[in-house]
Image (cartoon, rainbow, N blue to C red; front, side):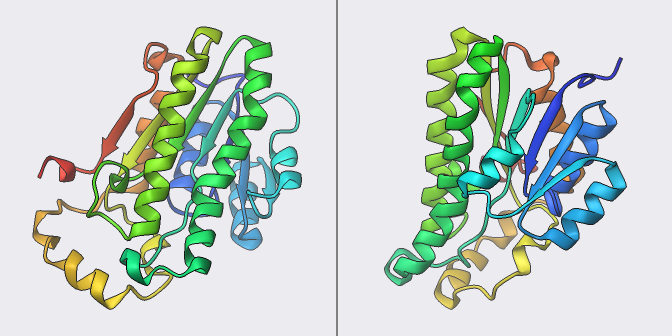
Length: 241
């Protein structure tokens, strides 16, 4: 039997990149996938390919959260996220800060808050949050993105501690430089890029989204039944530098 047979897995940010790779891998492992994203056209292609349910919309919206968590849910993957173009703190506008926090922190917070009582009533469930190498350091992204991923890691550890006795596991993955379109959606802040590029030589090869999805499939499966409150890097050793 496949590791995720009989499980329903909700994956946000499933229209592309790591989220799409997760959705594919989970489906291969036997899960019924609920693919969620704001990009309806790309999401429709993924849903058609996998034959899965799709929910298109703003993942911080209460109505969208209710739709994506409708029915039996066993696995919640808060994967969707946006970057901040490597913007240093003194250049972060109120608008940029609010936008990053809305998607990277508020959305997973709301989804976790909604699903936890249901998991507790069911006797268990799994939450997997996509953090970042930026959740483990101060120099892997801009200020708003770094703060958002630190916050998401805090939610991860707090949830594991509070709800572990109820059969609920909550872990995080911390991808490094992964080959996705996420990196090219906006030109980088000049000051931030100049500081960042000095360390390009410390970066290993860019990883593949499928390599992240392979770890995700393990963490949401029963093979990781004694793994809780952890953050695991998928960065080729980048954070070792």
